[in-house]
Image 1 (cartoon, one colour):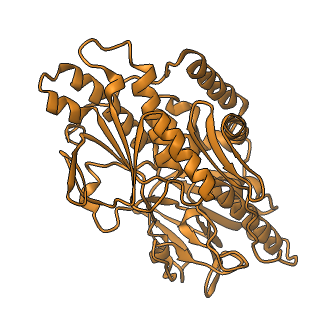
Image 2: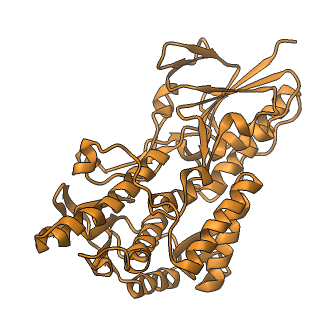
Length: 421
């Protein structure tokens, strides 16, 4: 019997979960990713804000599957799919044949048609994004220390986060902690506690996916930390000098984008219908219409719940889709009945705001404050890969909590033109 070849494009939550759960005789699994590591994206903002080191939230994909002889890992960038020949094409010219193809290529930040803003307002989806933002944050304080012009110094110490979803709220909270607590005794010419942290949201409230009472609590908690929340204000300009909210211009040399995402080009590779965010529209079994051998999962896929609502682009949803597709492929290879259509189980929404402050929405149960913060922390530690990572993150958090200091405050990247904006 010929070996069944499964190719997984993307080593994120969905792809990794699929490869872990897929265990079939006479089946080979090939994981293709542009990077050599799996990233625990929910904690990426803590790398950007100097709390955690990159090695604490990322692991080499090869190391994860070192004991799985049926799994191969390739470092490469997919540029196309030949559905007729069942071949994946890589940027370097290589081609990889498949019997079953799973596209789990994730998403990138979207600028709603204003891509020219990206050099001035980096998003946060990859380790490179996090280290770039971390560098800009730290350099802002260093350059302000040397600046004698009070207006320029004020602009250097104004940090603007665009988008008040969980990522934006979490970024704003930790930047406030960094400026108002961690760095206060380390500079001589500037008062870091005078830094202005601005959280901008086009909608009418922060954390719009949470119940209104939790959104209101988050807004109050941010204000208590010194974050200026501006809701109902879409950004109309973004450049090296700052941002504009309508006719109001705010000088700000450090801007971070947390306002939206755009799916990868996977839908175009396979000719699938797309939604407004570019996600491939898939069936209830997560396959592309007319091609049962092609699955699209995770942030790349537009998946509907039984009541027609969109499955959110969060890690638990991606993992559930990976688990489901593994069951489907297992059933096919073993010539058994396929499982019932995919059904998303919502596990709740979680967001941290600052030390001892978080919000959790479990549906009927809603939590806020210190208890929510502890549950948030324990949940994230639980889902990290490996005992070493769990211990490292727990110790970094304990150190930050007790001392008020962040352990990953090194400026290590070579200075580039983008860092000068």
